[in-house]
Length: 240
Image (cartoon, rainbow, N blue to C red; front, side):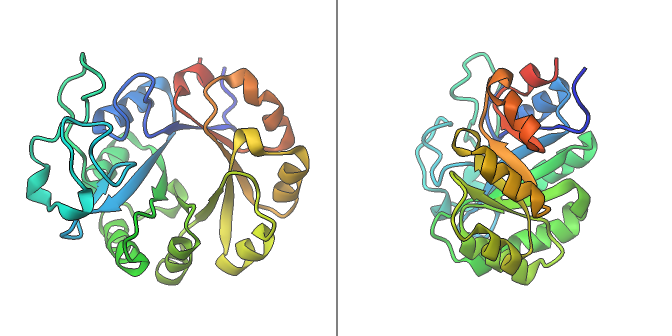
């Protein structure tokens, strides 16, 4: 039986089973038993917030477009199941649509803010409004980013939010920054995390999340070090 104290977070849903960052992918993650999913957001030209990892549609869809140059009506016909020939049509989802689905499925969310060169104040103000109207539950949400500018803006505009500092290896100034921005969790690449780093994070009282490990046996020692959550493409393998 899976350990209920270990958070298994479906990375962009369950991309080993379904198209990433899609409504169907998040449903599939829930079917594996995952109680959390991770996703990425960015803005269209008309300030519509959408769920997509890249600044373009090229990698995952049947189109080639820069999202920051599109408006909502231009999303029609984009099929984000292009890499999964046996999967039915998947629209590029609006964040508002995903919020409604997560509420229906009672899934918790690690929302990553992507730094695609858009003004941080603009990005966070749109997110703030959506959270207030569609997903007003801080206990089910962590907002993470590699961008300190975006995290700083979240701290300013959404001070109640639980913020996660994304990194590859733990930066030297992480403790100072975490105090300054009221960071809730540290999100490290699993393979770059040392035992001493893990102990520091836990001793200072922060949650420790690691990304992206797809074989449970690779991170067994990290659970012993105090890791709270793993972000994975294969949630089904952790939840057998």
